[in-house]
Length: 472
Image 1 (spheres, rainbow, N blue to C red):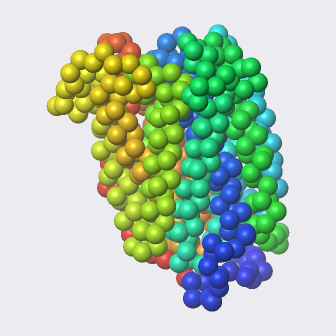
Image 2 (tube, one colour):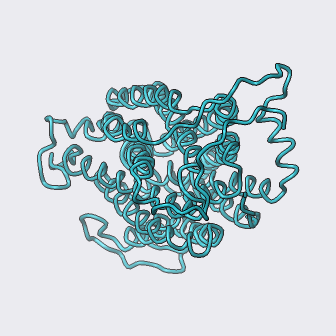
Image 3 (cartoon, helix red, strand yellow):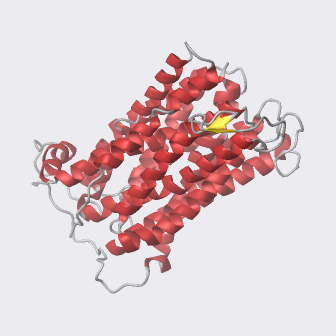
C-alpha cells in the first residue's frame, strides 16, 4: 500500500503486561456507548414505537408492516452506501469523534420529531425521521467500533465486545422499564404497567406514551454518551495522502485485500447474510408479534423486556465462552438457535405451533400472555434474545482480531457494508412476500409468510462462515 502510515500508537498486545481491561476508565467509557445507543434500537425500532407504527399509525397491520419494512430497507441501503466511504475518510484522517458528534445531533433531532407522529398522521414523514435516525445510529456504531482494536489487548477483544453488547441491553431494559412503567398507559385503563397514571399527563388514547419513545431515546443518548467523548482515546490524526491520483482505499480493500485474504472475504459474505437476517428480525419482530396476537403497547414492551434480559444473559455468558473458545463457536451456536427460533415464531398461530404439530386447547384466558400460543411465542423470543447479541458481539471481536489496527476503520466500514449491503434485501423480501400473500390469505397469515423469509439468511450465513486467522 502506498498510503502513508500513521505514527506508532501505544497499542496493547496480548503479551504486554497490563492491568485487566475492565479496570480501565477508557474501556468502561467505550462500553458505555452501547448503553447510550441501545435504547433507540430497543424502544424505537423494535418494541414500542415500531409496533405502534404498524398496529395503530397505519390503516391495517399488513400495510403497516410493509411500510415499516420499506423504511428499514431504505435505512440499510443508505448505511451500506455510506459506511465504507466513512471508513475510507476515517483511515485517511484518523479521528472519529468529530463525525460522531455530528451524527449524534442528527440522531437526537430525528428521534425527537417522532413525538408528533399522532394517529392519522401521514406515514411518509414519520418513516423519513426513522430512516434519518437509523442512519445516524448505525454509522455511529461503525465509528465507535473502530476504537476497539487499539483500546484493549487482542486476547480480551471478545470479552470486552460481549460485555459492551450486554451492557447495551441493560440500557435497553431500563429504557423499556421507564417507557412501560411511567409513560405508556393502556387506553382501556389509563394506567401504566406499574399501575400508575402516565407521567406528564400523557394521553393513552392518542398513544402519547408510545410516541414518547423517540424523545426518550434522544435524551438517553445525550445523557450517557459523553464519557466516550471524554475518556476514550481518539484515533491519531494521519498525514495527508501524498499522491492525489491514488485509488480510493476502500476500493483497494475491496479489490485487493479481499482477494489476498479469501477467508476474510468469505467471513464478510457470511456476515452480510446473517446480519441482514438479524436486522430484519429485530426491526420487524416486535411489530410481527403485535400483529399476530393483537398485543398492546404494554404487551409488546414486556416482550421486548424479556428479550433484552435474555440477550444480556446471553452476552455475559458469551463473553467468557468467546475468551475461552474463540468467537467462531459462539457465532455458530447463535446462528443455529436463530434458525430454530425463527421457524418457531412463524409457525405459531393462536391455536397451534410448529406448523400444527402441537395444537392448543381453546382458551378463554385473559391477561398478559395468557394463552398457550403466546407463551410458546415468548419461548421462541427468549431463544432469539439469548442468541442474537452474542452473534453480533463475537462477530465484531472476530474481525477486530483479524485486521491490522491501523486499518481498522476501513475494515469496519467494509464490515458494516457486509451487514448493510443487502440490508434492504431481507426487509424488502419480507415486505414483498407479505404484500403478495395478502392477496390470497388474511393479513395475520400473510405476515407469517413474509417473516419466514428471514430464516433463509441465517441458514446461508451459517453455511458460509469460515475460520478466521488472527492478525499479528
